[in-house]
Structure formats: C-alpha cells, structure tokens
Length: 258
Image (cartoon, rainbow, N blue to C red; front, side, top):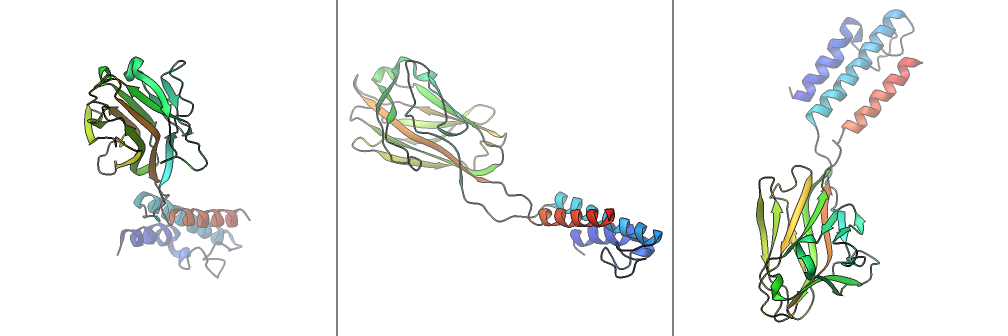
C-alpha cells in the first residue's frame, strides 16, 4: 500500500474505531458525520479528525503541481539612473537593487534601447562606462529570490570598437565569487545576452547577487553600455491536491458545527 493509502487507513478508519465503518459520509447516524445521537456525533468528529490528519499527511508528503510560466522578479530599465545623485538604483519593476558604486567616477549615461525592455518602456538611458582606466571596474545586481526556481537573467549591451570587450559575470555562492560567464559586447549594435542560473544553486539561500566585471578597453574613449537588466524565475507552485483537501476539511468542520 502507498504511503498516502496507509495515511488514509490510519487516520480515517483507525480514528473512527467501530463506529466509523462508513467514513465521513456515512449514511447511518451512528456511523457518519450526520448522526443525531451522541455516538454518531463522536464518530463524525473522529471522521473529521481523520480527514484533517490526511490533509496534514498529504501536505507533509507534497505533490508536484503544474509548472508555471517564468515570471519577472526584478528589472532595471536604467531610465531613472542619475550618477550625480546616487550610484544605487532600485528596480523599475519588481524588487531589487542595482549598485554601481564599484564603477566610481566612471559611471555615466548614454542612449539606451528597447531591446529586452519590459512592455511599454521607452529606450531612455543606458548605464555607460568610458575609458580604459576603468578596466576591472564592476557593478552588482542584488535581489531576493524566495518562492522562485529556475532563475535566469538577461540584459542588453553594446560597446565601441576600443571599448570593453573582455567582460564577465560572477555570482556570489555564499563562500565567494564564482564566474558564471564571460562575454564580449557587440561593437556595432545592441545585443541581448541571456543566462540561466538553474543549475548553479546560486540563490538557494533565497538571495541572489550578480557582479558585472568589465575589462579589455584599449583606449581612453572606449566605452560599454548596459540596459534592460532583468531577472526571471518560475514560481514554486503550492502542493497540488493539498488545497483541495484543505477545502474538504473545511466542509467537514462546518458540518460538525451544524
């Protein structure tokens, strides 16, 4: 017999004893919830306790729910970025923080793009860094990821011909920085970069930190731009069947009060 079957047997039949032969929906008053005599009420109460016990057992075991579509956790369109007032920018959608402190005086603005933007957003600004003096500079993205799995992120980027062409993305593992990927921005047009975090366990603690490290600029006017940074994930579904059983338990509880 399966674990669920055993739980049903112990919780429903065992709790009802002799008078619970017909279960929660017993036809006769002595055996069911609908009993009008004291014995029937006690048996009905035992049946209710049995169902509640089954619900707890099912919740403990858990069922796989239907897979949900990827949802946006946080995104930054960079349109509100103002280096003169702050190097830290909250997400324009969702909750999270973009920290550009590591770019120092190199943090600037250039024309952005709608590539990778959220629906209805304008091109606006892009985060920009100019000059090979800022090789090895970095900025970070931080956000909570509780309730999500199969994380992924994307961003739009481009550079000039002498700009930063040897870049990498790190993630914080809890013990130190680990390299996720290396990339070289397109020198002629915007391109969308996309990466999966599903196999890294990078956000197993419920918090994700990514670091963008730029390098490879060969001239004082060499530049790179970033825009429309987004982090998505698949919402963790509630245990399938558990919600329905909680509803059943509620029905039994209401019938006991009548």
